[in-house]
Length: 267
Length: 261
Image (cartoon, rainbow over all chains, first blue to last red):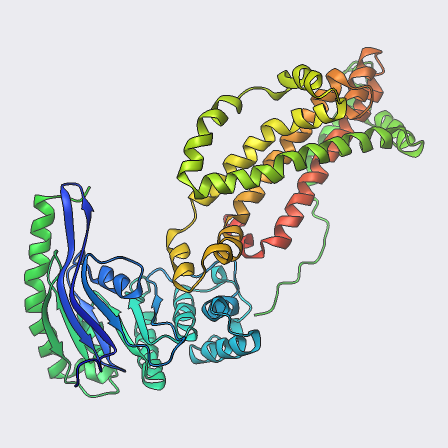
């Protein structure tokens, strides 16, 4: 692909912050291209900075050096929208008002943003809950609202930070399928952080493995499985072989990370 | 999901204990177990109360107390919420005000009455300022703590979805802090009532506190009880009103408050 055609270009990105004993490097010289419409999953040992990488792309955390470039195809469209791990809905707003929040702040007129929000609620199956408040919903429903809120803001890139980590196993499987359906339907570019290899392989076009801190790109695995990927994909021998291959490399990093923690326990 | 319909119905459980106390008191007072001079029968007090409501004397005292209470509460609540929000949002503001406030807050505010009266030369203004004093700090610190305890992820998400500056304050920070603000207002209102009545006892000629103290001075004990009951009912009505307003303004925090019920 020609240079500049990528949806997201991360070049030589280094992120550091002041730690107990001087500068703590969270991410070191990360380079990554994400193509338009691609679904990229980030995996790595906990504390490797995969969430930090997502937050830098979202503009929520600052970088020390390097570049993050997000192509904006339609002017006025926000470059990113994040689905937070703990949903982070505004508890004083109804489901509908939460989904309208981004467009409201951008000055989209009420009839337009409401129609759009209702369409998104239809897409995530929550049409009947438009007037409910977040505390009246289950964990899975809250995260659906979180997804609808992000999609309603019509971002160039959808960022998802372990969105299903706090949910029970059954709900997680259902939502994984829904995320795939939405992605196929809307054609949005997705960067997805997860600690589950199975989830990464089920969802992603590519899986990016980060090293233990300081996080670097250890290897990028293309996922040669066809789509749609349902339960039968999980049962296929290729799927298992790929999990084993990635796990072999991830394991080294998890051990390194545990070793580092023993030497220097987190305060 | 439909909005739950709340029908008004009489719940008898909360009335059992007060009813038992009143009946026991009535019997004890009637049989001479309690000295009727100091503990007149509740039915006697009730008759006098109704009579004083009918001839307007009680309402005049009540009206004056409510007017003082309102003035003092507004004087405490409006600047209290503003300063509390500012202290919650800005560390420098907090550091600047906290030492002074820590010094002033524990002083029993009635002690200021002579000084404030002398400085302001306006008896009613002095009463309002004195009664507002401690409530102001209650509102400030409850509001400030409310801001400090807000969920950082929610605030970050709100910024991420484009709420900045004035918009952020009005559509995110303020509604998010509303439950804490209401807690502060409820505490402040209760405390303001206490101080208004206390100040009336020591310095006023009219008002419920004055009625109570002057009746006691001339041993019109039944009238003293009328004043006492009126203050109690006033307190309960005010608490109920704040609770009603809270339910109207913060429907989203309802079930949270009812956990464990």
